[in-house]
Image (cartoon, rainbow, N blue to C red; front, side, top):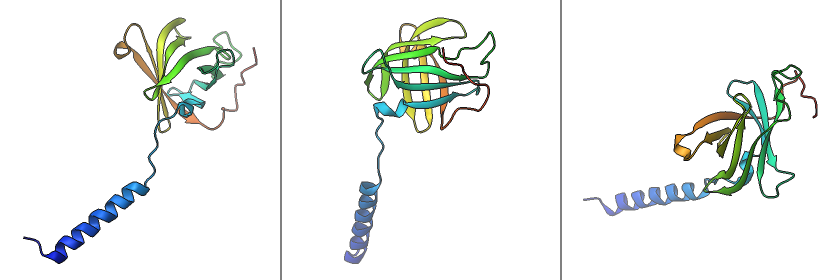
Length: 148
């Protein structure tokens, strides 16, 4: 059996641990977390996610840098996502366009730390594919996307 002094030390340790946990900031996901510049895992395109100009309350993703800029394979300026609603820590209820296969899918976007997961699917989300993108502060210098 513990002595009163041992119990007091345990209680003090528990209180200090609880105080530390209470002081540690917790980052809950927010609808703004997806906004900004994101480079693909292959480093062949940068997508800018921001509020849609033509659809209030929605999130749009547009290619703002492409390694193939200025060539026949150029996808600069292509809107690749429009997601209408933020709920349960994800943007949903919209579409995702894959310029490689020129197909449009249902889509969802989730952000965790500096990684954005862009999910494209047909039917139910669990049967889809996810592209990982990583936050960047600036566009690569070359090649330059020309405004369309």
